[in-house]
Picture (cartoon, rainbow, N blue to C red):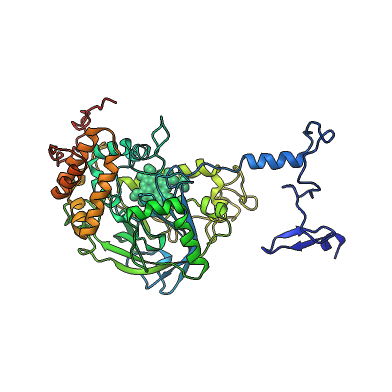
Amino acid sequence: ASVHDQKLRRGNGGELHQIAEDGHPVLTTAQGAPVADDQNTLRVGARGPALIEDFHFREKIFHFDHERIPERVVHARGYGAHGYFETYESLAAYTRADLFQRAGEKTPAFVRFSTVAGSKGSFDLARDVRGFAVKIYTNEGNWDLVGNNIPVFFIQDAIKFPDIIHAVKPEPDRGFPQAQSAHDNFWDFISLTPESMHMIMWVMSDRAIPRSFRFMEGFGVHTFRFVNAKDESTFVKFHWKPKLGLQSVAWNEAVKINGADPDFHRRDLWQAIQSGNFPEWELQVQLFDQDFADSFDFDVLDPTKLIPEEVLPPKPVGRLVLDRMPDNFFAETEQVAFMTQNVPPGIDFSNDPLLQGRNFSYLDTQLKRLGSTNFTHLPINAPKCPFAHFQQDGHMAMRNPVGRVNYQPNSFGEGPRESPRAGYRHFNAQESGEKVRLRPESFADHYSQARQFYISQTPPEQRHIAMALTFELSKVETPVIRERMVSHLLNIDETLANKVAIALGIDALPKPAAAAVETRQDLEPSPALSIIQR
Ligand code: HEM
């Protein structure tokens, strides 16, 4: 061995170090130059000015100054783990997706759980929706099922997403509240958006304060399509069912936990996995065709609706096990980029207008947050199957096309080619119609499923919903917003509405909100949009 080789040694993580005479690993600059003094900047005399030629100091401070990247615009606070998905039986009759072809096959996966509204440094037990984002590294590309722990969403059209998120995040003039929904802007928007009522009932329920990530359900929310090898399509809704069952905490417990340990959920996941208690979820699917979809009064393309599990029992098709924590929180959990449009052959989209908008948004936001089109080169985001394309260059390119040819077709017989048979084929749905901005009539019933959810709850759970609504609305300073919320509750459950109204000191009940909601295309403002004098 050369003299140089003798001075190298592997550290605990397998990394190579330069070794000092006394045997310890040598600190170096990012360029690899060994550092002699990491305690003092280079100065003219011990009390003199610092010298700009101190490249070690400059590099160290420069890099530190740039450590932060933007937090996610939503779901900023999250915690992830590695694991695998195991298929129970072949679903070849429904989908050609490779991960669903062979019973017992295991496919690597990464999951990130999150809260939606709070900042990265907020606390874990906020009353909020929880993100349940799953990346499965299949043999034919990554499949991202970017779901929540609630099976429906606030809005029907992605064009409203910036509005609801602005309303739920801190108010721009005062910068608070940081992590609670208890404020005028949020309830103002909700009360003017009747389509949110179903989701609001879930968010006011115990579902929004889970005991741990391990006791939560997950939902793909939208109707997707399975497409089989014969190009036949079946509609599908995805559900994750926790093996440990569902558990929540009570509100007064959540408040105490947040004070005592704001990291309660992440600590729970870390401790469970480190001690070998690997959390597990079963993937269950609701499969149906167009005739079945047409049998409902609501529209299966409307993300504020669910298909009752009593009507269409979900079919268990596999399990997800989380068995390894990331080695590095930033490299993996923070830099993981979920995108609804990441689907392998055999899984396709429906026309759900929220899903269609999400398919644009996620790619866009990853460029902003991770800073380079080459975020797919990061190990956590790269496929684990072979991949080959002619995309090249850009900031931080870690790999480029190999050889002379970076285009196709080419005459040199080089490089990858498209494959009509193996490649992703979008389902050949027949579409026609005028270009319009119009909400379909089939999206208009905003109260029936909210009512069904409320009625399905046990009496203590119903009490918790009434208490949550009372607490939240009691923080709203503008009386007309509270009254408008009560007018919606009257359409959901009269006893609930009365309870909340009395607790809020509203003596005269408002009229129930107009039940049929405008689906018109005209430009008249809705009558509900009375201007509030601040
Ligand atoms: C992030 C779920 C609707 C835009 C996320 C995350 C989840 C999620 C779980 C966090 C991913 C992670 O852990 O890294 C959902 C669900 C929705 C929904 C279930 C409705 C059914 C939307 C809509 C839009 C949107 C309508 C925009 C039109 C975003 C953005 C991020 C995000 C920009 C941040 C992504 C990042 O920076 O990594 N969403 N979302 N979402 N979502 Fe959604």
